[in-house]
Amino acid sequence: MSIIARLEGASKAFEGGILALDGLTLSIPEGGFVSLLGPSGCGKSTALRLLAGLEAPSAGRREWPGGKPQMGFVFQDATLMPWASVFDNVALPLRLLRRPMAADEIAAALERVGLAAFARAMPRSLSGGMRMRASLARALITRPQLLLLDEPFAALDELTREDLNDALLALHTAQRFSAVFVTHSVGESVYLSNRIIVMSPRPGRVIASFTNDDPLPRPRGYRSSAGFAARCGEISFALRAGMKEAVA
Amino acid sequence: MKRAFSLFLPLIVAALFLGLWEGAVTAFAIKPFVLPAPSAIGLALWRDAGSLGLSALVTLRITVIAFALALVMGVGLAVLFAQSRLIARSLYPYAVALQVTPVVAIAPLILIWVGLEHAQRALLILATIVAFFPILSNTTLGLKSADPNLVALFDLYGAGRWQKLWRLQLPSALPFILAGAKVAGGLALIGTVVAEFVAGSGTSAGLAWRIIEAGNRLQVPKMFAALFVLSALGLAIFAVLSWIEWLALRGWHESTLDRREG
Ligand SMILES: Nc1ncnc2c1ncn2[C@@H]1O[C@H](COP(=O)(O)OP(=O)(O)OP(=O)(O)O)[C@@H](O)[C@H]1O
Ligand SMILES: [Mg+2]
Image 1: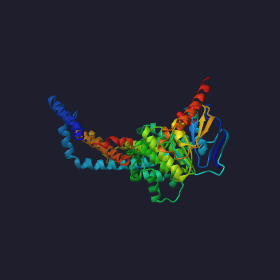
Image 2: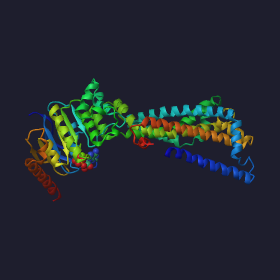
Image 3: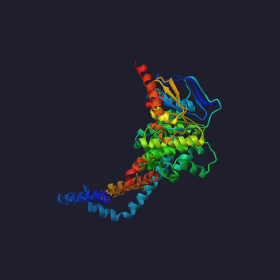
Image 4: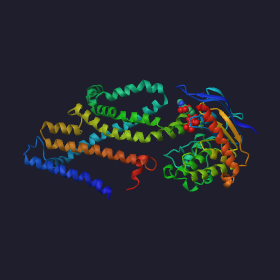
């Protein structure tokens, strides 16, 4: 499988001497769904920003083997422009890229995330889950090859979160983008991805990586299967081992 | 109901206050050139409504033009500052210096420069100087207040500086600009009146001149009437700007949330 983005021994030091990443190496395969797990402050967000080209590594390399991919980004907050309607928020990437924009294209994108009736609503009038759906629609409107998600559902309640996990997987199946999904939740990472990367506490590097070959998207009952529980146990163990090592 | 009450309350306070005032003036037989009774002021207001109204228009005209100039210059300069730190660093201290120098102190100089025959122009310049700083400082702050994640998103899509300015920084700054404008509206009026006082007789037919004139003739009730018109102007300016602010932010900004009910 070809690689769409890669970090090769990437380190990132910030002003003030904080070393956020220390020789992080990871590859994002085309069409893959990669989850990034790690304790708070280990540099997950920084890794995403490096992958996106929003920042440059202070050592090591970031590579886009097939040239700079079209990308979408989803943050922990929906990060919508509060002064613009849902329609205008979703249309933003096309406008910034000066691409021709068809209204029915936006309408279709809203339809896919279940917001067909809310094109003219202002973000303030939406629930947290609906805002996050709008944010997803915006990130996917350019048909990106690479979707980067930074703890997108962390602030949502459990049920909304599960709904959005399913919505995301459906979109992944339909649009075939590669995804990098940062999360604190072991269960979420197992449910969503076919590759799970566990990072050490700061400075972040890879301490374990797992593959999950169960086909995507996964059935509703997947979360209560024995296989799911076993994978979660394995990954939690690796995460804890990393924390202990750091304390010792 | 609540709304009617909140309108009613200041009116009750006014009625009480005026009643006490009227009573005190009569009871202690205070001379009208020391403190006129509200009824005497009301009478002066009625009698001199024509000249006071004309003067109010003169003052208002300069205030409004000065405010508009301050708005354009304040926002324009803030946008310029946002484009280059070098420009901001080198010019901002002078904007502050202009702000902290009392307008009364520079007024004579400006008058000499533009010539007494152009006193109106001097008033305009002085009022603009007074009004422009809150707009500059608020807009500068507002342009910097854009959500950093949105900034990252704009970078991700390769947005240029003008796209960022127009689609992100200016809308983010709008609540700040409007708050600054509310302060600037009042300051423009103050600046105009102070400049009128300094420019003095014959140069302006504004409200300040009515106050000086009435004072010279010891027509104290008329002085109070002119003061009353001045306060009314200030309140009207504030009300209009608050209304514009509400219209512009309605539907998206937190500050308009509570207005939705009631
Ligand atoms: N711009 C910056 N300047 C200085 N330090 C920074 C900057 N950005 C991040 N850091 C520091 O780098 C470290 C890693 O930050 P990062 O946001 O990547 O962690 P994270 O794994 O995403 O954390 P969380 O789980 O809390 O989101 C943190 O200690 C943070 O304080
Ligand atoms: Mg983070």
